[in-house]
Length: 316
Image 1 (cartoon, helix red, strand yellow):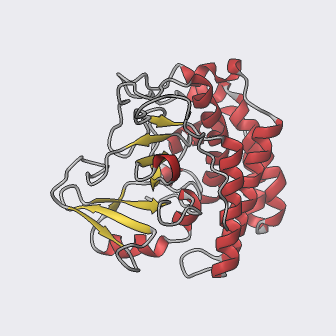
Image 2 (cartoon, helix red, strand yellow; image 1 turned 60 degrees about the vertical axis):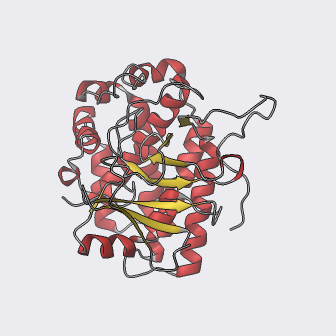
Image 3 (cartoon, helix red, strand yellow; image 1 turned 90 degrees about the horizontal axis):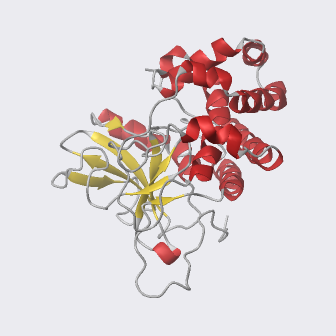
């Protein structure tokens, strides 16, 4: 794929002088989803699957992302629907709050998205999984809200793996639009609160780190697994603990590989970096999913993953 259509809005070239580093970047969501789906299909056709991720699963992920794009375009979130989430967002001084189960129960947008995704994609899934997902769509709002709350609070083992992917997809289209509508920060403002590799807007884990190209060449941003916000992080410092003395970079290829793993010898955490300055086609979620072999190698060395891929939830 050679796609120069970025989901990141371009810099305003009419502003004179050196531009301040933007602390937050909100994506053009429909472009992000389209690029992600396209990248998943490219990786699917190029690799034909692997021991870690089968080709059929990359194709499934592409179809689900396409449905996220369709849902956002056909059923955009209104400012009124976003209000409950806007009240939870970090304000630059305090961290984002986690939603209560009652809030999740009363917010029907994400539930409608979840049900739409299951209705469209479950016929293409194994019969047993499809039946389980169908049963979940018939559950009451309290049951759905309890499962969503478990995911948002990191107790992934409390939700079936198949359901987790669909629930997160519904939650993500809700949160990403709500955060974009709130627009709590701008360029040059004080850095928002970010605890380790957690999003300063919604508190969810990052999917990974991006080193950008183009107008923002060389800047590093982490990308949220839930609301898709990108927040600035200085390079050569651990994204989890902030340490600088024992940060190392790993890859399966050469030292200038486009995908690297940043590890910290102090906190023993790690996160992948996707160097768009070396390969502008890289997409965090898609390329992370297709490179799980790196995770296995690092975890054998005792490092702990700090990121979350919305198509590969940890079992514990």
